[in-house]
View 1 (cartoon, rainbow, N blue to C red):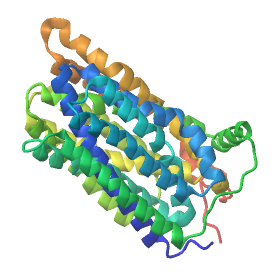
View 2: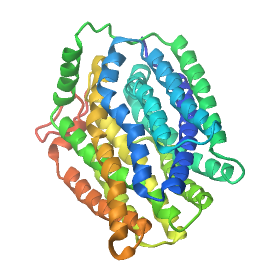
View 3: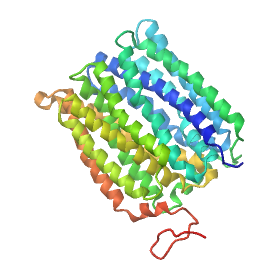
View 4: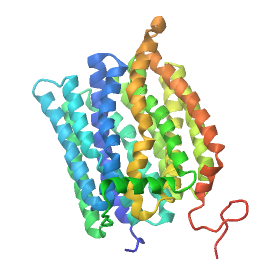
Length: 424
């Protein structure tokens, strides 16, 4: 199937995921505030975040295998639709007397199990329908959709929580699942199924996916280093809310998160229009180094203006880093192995998030007890340390020649210095 003129189909698919991301962000923000009010600790929020994420990473590898065997759009519809069952369970608990921690943990885990079907199929579908030249722009748009849970959701949720309870947020989230299913179904009718009809058994499929990841020098190194990056990003993601809630209200937190996420909006829009044409490894290292500096700035003072300024700059770096990581990975994996490869990549690269969610809340609570500084400053200290380590990681990436060579696609002619040359 030709891939020309498919960008409109991608935009429709993207719009559905944008709406779903906003709905998921409403639930995430509402549950975060509710749990902090319930427990008064960062570890409680981190536990729920971990349980919402862990099933997704554990099941990402088999989900990637399924994405190469079956219709990827159907898998996306199943993943989006069935993940709403977990949110529905939490809503019922609230409507029948209020949800406790175990019930919330069960609900988010159910939702995460089915959501695991989505990511490998979604990423592989982008490869199915777009040309190589459109990947960079698409990555910027995908980052924009992801940023909506930080850009729009906190502002909407913070305002709604001043006039209603969390049940309204959950109802809105459930409604967004139907919209996403419809947009995916429309896109599916307009393109052919790209499933490979892969007859390998499960073990061989995983092995084949690993060979695709490990077959290009530098690719496995980049993916492993990305797990280190997600560790530091995860620490900020978990701890920025208790850091702010320790001295401000949930409404102020919602406004602050929206202001900060505007940085992601600006850079995502720029990438969606112009993209990045070369120098991906350099842009990757530079964006991560600056992100580390801005993380440090966010942690230094209990001042909302400074937090918003540094937060805006931090979020502006994320789409650049994500776009570079996505391009360097996507262009070095065979199309027929994209599903299982993305499943493995998701598993490896997001191990950092699991570690962050598992220990960052506990560490922040412990640091807060030292000198009786409180959980807010304990969280800030953890963010400060993570910023320094992210800068160190970015310097390591810049120094890796094998990562720089990933910009040369397989089959491209190269000169004696290992640089790509123009083909006639």
